[in-house]
Image 1 (cartoon, helix red, strand yellow):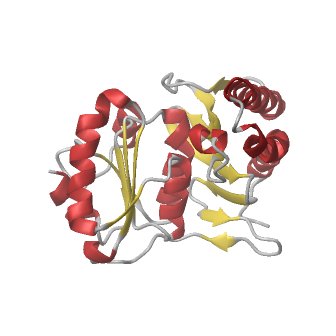
Image 2: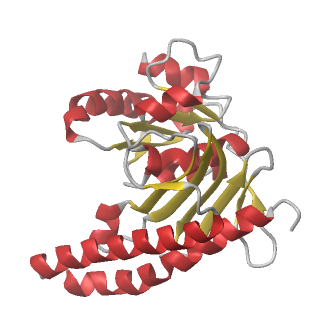
Length: 265
């Protein structure tokens, strides 16, 4: 279709090819739960296979772009890659994890793919062209929710580092008191994809890795949502570079943005 450029088509294909083995590996996880040693080795092996496959497939598209799979800052032109975002879910047989890939050019995210192979759910976006969920015949255009009342909202929260646990618990308690309906699902890329889809009304992520949330940022933006840094002073403007550096982000629709910031402050 016209809204999928050749480069984005190649990116989607690369992610799907790299994720092929994950489905087979995931089917083995439950059987291995009783074996701690073999289970851990298997998860490490699955992660490594996915990372290597992504590097190989992405290298065919843009051999001159770096493939970043850690928290290294995005410089120049690169792929920001999470081979398995939600690794703990994967390791415990929970089908809520994703392969997340973003194309970043001069600190601007230009293309994004988030794919959960466990349920064959794929989200994609290209800067200025909208965000979509893949369908069998027609792709679904994504739009953030229009919910205005935080007490009726469904909010996702996520923290990455235990050293931030105190800050996270304080933040989480504020959101629970105001929104009541809070989910901690363990995969920030999917949290953001669900905000873009209107399933979640907001997502709050503390100290997460850039390669895990970069693709989700573009999904939310292209679906009409807003991305803020938790600690920024002014809710009237976004600073995506600041968000990418800190990993402390709020993704929200326009109706709830001010209210969420009032609570966080």
